[in-house]
Amino acid sequence: MRNIKDIINSFGGIAADVKNAAPGQVAFANITQLGAESTFLSQFAVRVSDESNIAQARRMLAPDAPIVEDGTTFEFRYWPISQSMTTVDYDELKRAVGGDYKAISDRAEKRAGNLDDIGLCIEAENDHIERIPNYKEMLVRKLINVIERATFIRTLDLFDLFATDTEVSVGTQDLGAVVRDILASEIVTPNTALVGAKAWNLYMSGVESKLTAGALAAPKSAAEFGARYGLDVLVPNGRKAAADGTFPLIINDKIYLGYSSGVSTEDMSNMKVFRPGTGFTVYESPHAQGRKTLITVYTKQGVQVTSTAGANVITVTE
Image (cartoon, rainbow, N blue to C red; front, side, top):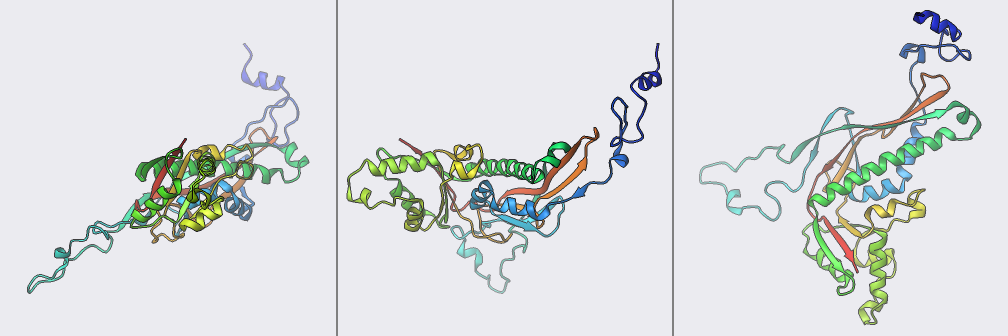
C-alpha cells in the first residue's frame, strides 16, 4: 500500500506556497500563507448603496439611522410611548394635594435592538480581474444589490405585520379618494408612498375608464399624485431599478403609505435600518486555490420598527 508521501510525490511534490505552485504540485494553505485581508473601494461601496434604486425605495419606509458604536446591540427611540397623544389620562397628570407629580422613567421610550452580521462573498477569477476593466467594481455592485434587496424584502415583511390593511377595487372605487380618507384619518399623516407598478397601472386604467369630472381632474403622473396628497411618491421602474427587471414585482399590486422623517435615531419614522456610519465594508483576500480572489461585502445592521403610527398598505385590484 502506498503511503501519503509517495502519492503526493507522484503528483509532483509539495509546493512551498499556494501562489507559486507548479502544475501537478500539491499545495497546502492556512491563513498565514494566504495573507491578511485587504480592504478597498470603501467610498465606492457607500456610493453604490446610496445610488441603488432598491435602497432608495427601502429608505422611503425605513431610512438609514447610523449608530455611533459598531457593536452587537444598540438602543433606539420607540414611538408612540405608553401615554401617547391619543391615550393620555388627564387625571393621572394632576398633582395630588401635598404630593408630587407622577414620575416616569427617562428611558421609558427606548428599546434595545441587535445588529446582524450581513454579508456576501464572491469568488472572482484572477484572469477576469486582470482582463476586464472595473471587474471588481462590478462584482461589488452586484453583492451590494443582493444585500439591499434582501434588506428591502425584510422591511416589507415587517411593514406588512403592523400596517393597516386596505383593499381597493378600482372598478368600483376611487383610489385617490381612498388615499385621501386614509391621510385624513391618521394622527401621524403618512408622507411617503411606494407604489407597485401593477397598482399604478390599475389606478390609471380606472381613471381612464371613467368620464366623470373627478376622473378627468385626477392626477395623471406620480409627481401629480404626490403633489395632490402631500406624498413623496416612487413607482419603481424595472429598467432602472434592477438589471433583471424584477424589482417592481416585489411590491407589484400594493401601495405602501408610511411616515419617514429623517435619519436620526430620535425621529418618528415607522422603521429604520441601523448601520455603522461606515455603511458597507468591502475587502478582498486570496483564494486557497491560488487562481481566484475572494471579494466580500458586509455590514452590521438592524431593521427595527420604531413607530406603528401612520402606516398603511393598500392592495389594488381590478
